[in-house]
Image (cartoon, helix red, strand yellow):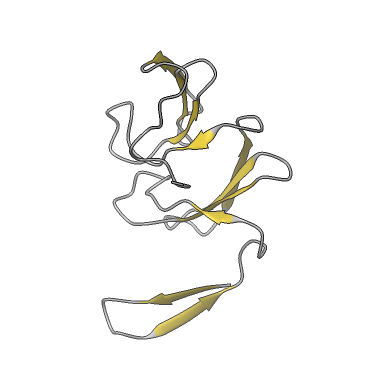
Amino acid sequence: MFWILRSSDLSAMAIPFGLAIDQVIPGDYDHDGKADLCLHRYTNDTFYWLRSSDGQVGSVQWGVWGDDLVAGDYTGNPGSDITIWRPAEGNFYSYDPVDSSITVFHWGKQGDSPVGRSSVH
């Protein structure tokens, strides 16, 4: 369950989305300038996002066990990309949920930890 406090009128909204085991990955995944609800489910390596632009749910199976989640804009478009960093390779794999384009780039080496990762230990 997501609880949202709207800045426009300070009203609270409850939105049932996801499971208790899911990890929240904040960002603007439909590139409309507003935050979307997004989560990652490790049991099936799938990202789910609720688009603020039209209320529809998008999903993509992305990554494998052991990948790090790294939220952010890695491709220069106006919103967030669904991105994982694979420590064994030192590669970032970025998926744009608007046009389904994929970008892969190498940065780092085995043993590094990306600064923007979602599960810092």
